[in-house]
Image 1 (cartoon, rainbow, N blue to C red):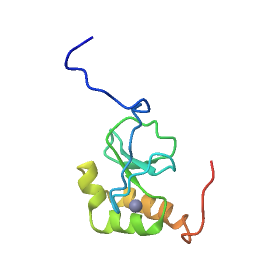
Image 2 (tube, rainbow, N blue to C red):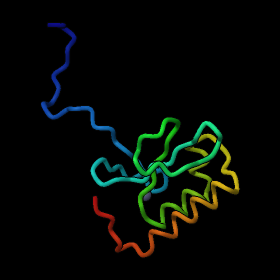
Image 3 (cartoon, rainbow, N blue to C red):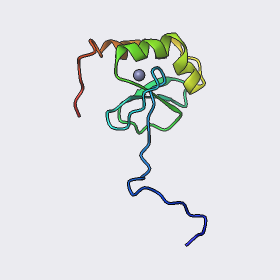
Image 4 (cartoon, rainbow, N blue to C red):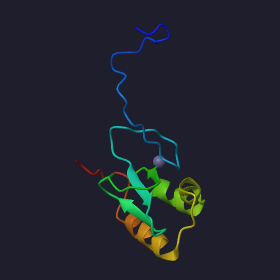
Length: 106
Ligand SMILES: [Zn+2]
């Protein structure tokens, strides 16, 4: 019994909170899309959330991606420069979101 131990709520499990780098909405339940800086210096979409490396999160919606990509927020978050190749991939992925009503399940 450490005298300095603080009382913690019972539900205080360590849930990793993800925050969209564009709109700063934190969301642990519904998946944000993880982007990861690979050792090759490429920015890849980490659909399974298991790739090693520095990561950043974006909501699965066009708006956030546009903001993340066009205002260099993603580059800032990953502390890198987006190569034209990476940017092309990301823009391609962004185009799959379609309209905001589309919800991905699972
Ligand atoms: Zn967002």
